[in-house]
Image (cartoon, rainbow, N blue to C red; front, side):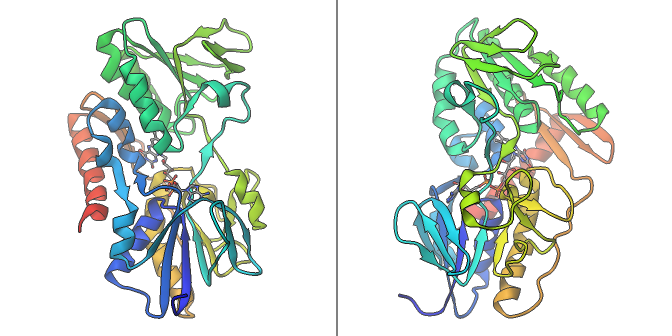
Length: 368
Ligand SMILES: Cc1cc2nc3c(=O)[nH]c(=O)nc-3n(C[C@H](O)[C@H](O)[C@H](O)COP(=O)(O)OP(=O)(O)OC[C@H]3O[C@@H](n4cnc5c(N)ncnc54)[C@H](O)[C@@H]3O)c2cc1C
């Protein structure tokens, strides 16, 4: 076994790719690093609707964690975490013996919430894991024909962007996209001005919006509602809220009411100074945060600084989330909608701005 103490990064999520990028520039002397993750190519969700719209090729939205780990001098272990023994400092995994660690960080994201709706797990196509989505999306695009009806269930940012992407790409071929917003409505929790603008743009793209009732059941050829008539569909994309992965229960770590790992301001799991959790897998105790890639990205530099601090026996610092983060939603037709501080803007220039931000993000992890 190699010398030194061991930093184990579990999950190739948005925060861990930043940790690796920084470690490549400035290693941690006396530490060896391992990234244990499920697959080599880690998808960047910000560009995924662009892939669905046909604006980007899939590989433009995928981060090569093998190359990133190599640059950081880290080992890559392709496997799936399944549990933890915090007292013995060992992570259990699907494909081999448990892995010991001195410092642990978990960035494994969330899973789609398919449990509450009968038939969803069987008949709907979840947006996550994204790597499983891409080939199934290709299969769906290949089926496009006049009269085909695709329902997108869940009208948060991801559902809205996916519906717009598919409508923009396939609307001209006579495919109909229905966005099922359920009881929570379109873009729950977002400013009314943004919601109104998105509703108008969705209508312009020919998207049919169904608001007011949750889906009671997904069946082979459609959606069933508690009161309204069923909706016949040829495909259902499942874009409802994120759930905690079941394996987190087997970690013995403190979790919030939804099952996510409870972390304090420094991103350390409560009561465990040597275990960090970031991104969607974490339940940020100081205040609830939306499960959004923005936080995973912004936590990356703080996480790296805090891992280094704990490794060197210094005090970690707090992650301070923005109160009103910038939201940019792609419309799939070469335009986007942006909002911040109550202002809403739509147009080609907003798309251009989003595209610049996303491409710059990807370049950071693709550079040799
Ligand atoms: C279609 C779509 C569009 C979106 N658009 C946006 C957007 O524009 N802006 C935004 O802010 N958010 C967006 N989101 C939300 C965003 O995807 C998530 O909030 C973000 O990906 C969370 O990042 P993360 O680092 O927590 O985890 P993830 O990005 O989910 O990464 C988790 C990683 O861990 C690995 N992994 C998972 N489980 C295990 C395990 N048990 N063992 C080992 N490895 C594991 C996975 O393979 C993956 O590499 C979108 C989501 C979707 C589905």
